[in-house]
Length: 492
Image 1 (cartoon, rainbow, N blue to C red):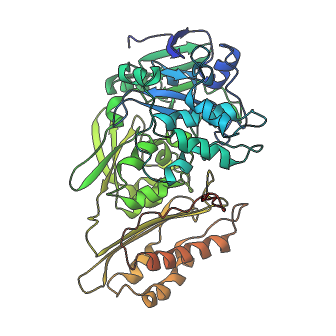
Image 2 (image 1 turned 30 degrees about the vertical axis):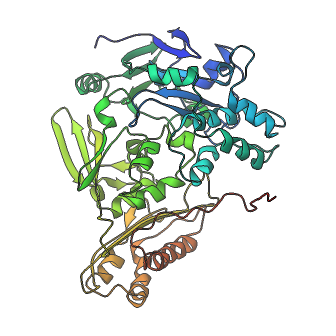
Image 3 (image 1 turned 90 degrees about the vertical axis):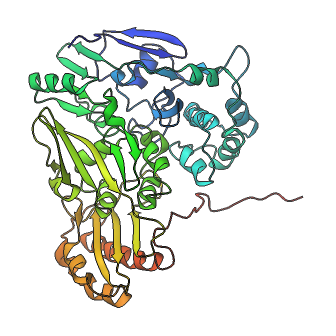
């Protein structure tokens, strides 16, 4: 492979070339300790607090070049190969502050100021978005930024004023001029190696030489091994530079979700055709996490509490696996083999997920997704569920797919409950008669997030709630419930 051997990217318009740091150096630490851009802060080092938020231009976004707010503490430096980064230091022009900075000042949205740069950069993304057409999207935009001092009302007041304004400035001009650059890279530092192939042939050649390499794309999970467990990760292969893995497109019958498509793009794309998937993604994570986390990353960890698996299982999704020998397609039911184990073989990757599109006008389909966690925003599931029923013309259950996370070693379906209701009328009596079978379908664990009894009870209640919620609307979107408990309205 003839590839670049040094890193090359841009920070606030200035080119940076680097060949002498570890590839597991985070963007946050590089900004602070090498470029001395100390406005970007470290709070939690795990993507929860937002103090480290910066913006990266994505020239290949589905609807054109856009800014993406990301947690720089989870971005390994090779992940920004060929990218343009904006930090809080880059917003001011001459003596003129950016409108988001001005608005936050006017709204009294900063006290101690430690988290303020990250808040500013999340507002910065909001400023240049053109899709903030629903109230929940502002909560979603800012939920990844903590502020213990100020409180959220003034921050949200300022955000509402700047959101979607897209001032005709140098940052809009930068989007207009944004160009897609190759991420091609073979980077070595000491005993560490980081490969960023841009074609499948390059990928297979790399895997032939380094069969034990670990894959990485968004880094929202793997990077925690660097920031929290202090591992060196000697051999990484990124799939981020392979464009075909970022295909996000639909036909009349199904969605094609490339394994490297980021979740914020999936959420926006499927809102009208796969409302169950949109529901699950609403509280999947903060905007910064969804701007980096990918479809393949969430599924290939095979976590028992991964949030994508239950809803995709319920929708009857299939997985396309790719190797040098070609592709093969399997049901997603057959993808998860055990705790943290998948059907991927040596030299094989997850290429994409195919999701059938339920016809939203059909009254015979019921489909929904649920996530139960200790708090609404930025939390790991205790129990999650993707639930789907198709009815016959006479109201009997033809197909049932009830998939759960958090109740077994892998995301799994309640097959005994499904079998018990197929061929029977879709009524509360039918469901209640089948629910005791959940005891045999799953043997949940007891841990700090919930006891086995609690998890079984929640799973039962989610099925009951699913029956009730879908009585009048078969595939309901998630209703908006404001994060704040008090709404202030000024009247003259």
